[in-house]
Amino acid sequence: MTSNDSGDPRSIAVDQLEAFGLSTYAARTFVALTGLGEGTAKDVSALAEVPRTRVYDAAAELREHGLVDVQQSTPKRFTAVSAETTGRRFRREYTRRADALTAALDEIEPVTPNAEQRGVWTVTGREMVSDRVVEFVEGASEEVVLVTLDVLLTDAVVDALRSAADRGVAVRVSGMDFSAADEDGDRLPEGCGFESPRAWTGVPAGRLLMVDRRRTLASVLVDGTGEHPSSARDETAIWGAGETNSLVVVLKAMFAWLNGE
Amino acid sequence: MTSNDSGDPRSIAVDQLEAFGLSTYAARTFVALTGLGEGTAKDVSALAEVPRTRVYDAAAELREHGLVDVQQSTPKRFTAVSAETTGRRFRREYTRRADALTAALDEIEPVTPNAEQRGVWTVTGREMVSDRVVEFVEGASEEVVLVTLDVLLTDAVVDALRSAADRGVAVRVSGMDFSAADEDGDRLPEGCGFESPRAWTGVPAGRLLMVDRRRTLASVLVDGTGEHPSSARDETAIWGAGETNSLVVVLKAMFAWLNGE
DNA sequence: GTGGGGGTTCACTCAGATAATCACAATAAG
DNA sequence: CTTATTGTGATTATCTGAGTGAACCCCCAC
Image (cartoon, each protein chain N blue to C red):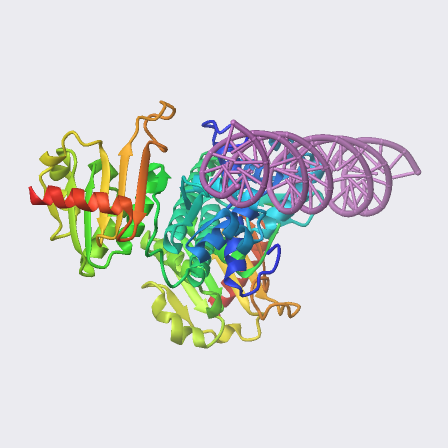
């Protein structure tokens, strides 16, 4: 991200290593050693644009992370672990971190979750919206009603719906576009009515979600300014919680009206 | 790690969030919002030791990461996503990063892996040594011989041994201490002889590994300076590769001698 | 319409960390 | 013994980010 995130595998590797908390010297040294297999400080310095006298510190830093072994000879020789081992190390470390984070946040979370909220919240980004959908579905205790484009029905959302249905929540899903019923009907758990989408033609395409009649979310896909071809930031959603929340009231009425027809 | 890594869940959460690349203001803001459920800049500032004027930047940063939603009103109100969603987000992001890193490094790795290496390399730390053991076992094509303390026979090592055995590698494992045969014999894959440990009494306790008679590793458990109760940095290992490597020659002879008896 | 107060944003300073360079000591080769 | 090369430490420059303060804006009261 900082420098060139071009297709060059070396740049990619350096960027990712920096994201994992390594200094740029350490990252460059490691990439050079991966290419060399084994080498001295001079070799690394020539290949990696790292001052020779700093290769030793970089190697020490990498050794702390278990990514480089060192030969105690003169000149010192360094070697990098394999790509698989590197990935395994970081995957393990950051999975642990995520677990610790979740556990710590769980202790902090207030006992009374946002029961009544006055206003309307906004989210942008397809993944972000999916996260909210999953979060709300996970918190469902009685009923989930979801209307969605099939392209937005990701695996994570389906999993959340299935686990909700498994614990006795009444789950009802319908698609906004026609292909939905054909392709994705079987992905959904049993007992989740997949209704005709005819009623939704003409409605701005996105998602509508209602959970326990106390929490609702509405989103639309906006044709982004043409940056990336319809990728990250192309969905915007609003959501609200609480019996008296204005958005909840509106969407509740909307669902009831569609149901009555 | 920077400040106090005491048992306080708030400190833990802040530390982990910073490890995931957030600024300290963003991390503290998020923790405060998790505790509050919802709040204004003033609320956050009072609870989180963040200057009120910078809560907005912190919230924007968190919004980029999909961790905070904003209410467009005066005063602005902020809310944090749930602990589960937070963990899910970072888990997904950093798993992706690890995958990208592994793929990029794979492209860089030289075709001719360290076939012949003159010297002897050193590794310290139990996890680091286990990583090398796994890496070497994964690279085995014909034969694996491992002598180990049972406490060092972690799941990752067992998995690597099993997958090696599955692809036709001759795997032979024996324990250095007596409990090994009893407790862990069933964890090993079929056809992996688990020999009597009598021959090893008196040998410094640790591991001995030989792969394809071309790569060997030897480690010992050292009673650390008493820092943490026998945890991280209490194993040191040396390893070498290549037919003519001195360590390989020595250990090959050692294994042959023990076999002959 | 005008003045006050709280809320929001922007601009600036300072400190810590890290990149980068240099000087010197230690070692091996000739 | 000399010299080139390697390893270690000290030094400087640069940069990000924490911390602070001032200006702007809007809403409300007067």
